[in-house]
Image 1: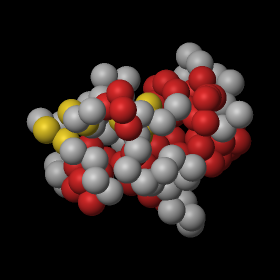
Image 2: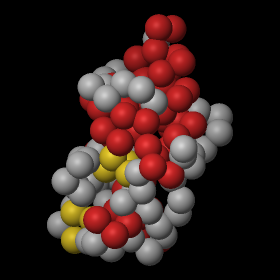
Image 3: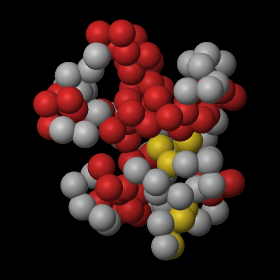
Length: 120
């Protein structure tokens, strides 16, 4: 993705991306969620990959989006290369008390936050 394509959200995706950011901002510190869980919560269960695109562009938002709290369904830091360094995502999670070993969140099941259940 080029820098220019990251800086502007395509008009047709603005509402979707905004809904993704709204959910991600509600993930509590020390907890994680998944791309698919966010997609399901906003009513687009087949759009986990699109949630990933939104997360990749979240750094352009004026209001902070804690994108480091979004991982894949297996508990892996699949988006770590979008954080400006190979260990930044892990360091952000660890600063919140989340243990990470070899790019995998330890105790994933116990710290998993499901917006579908939590934001009823």
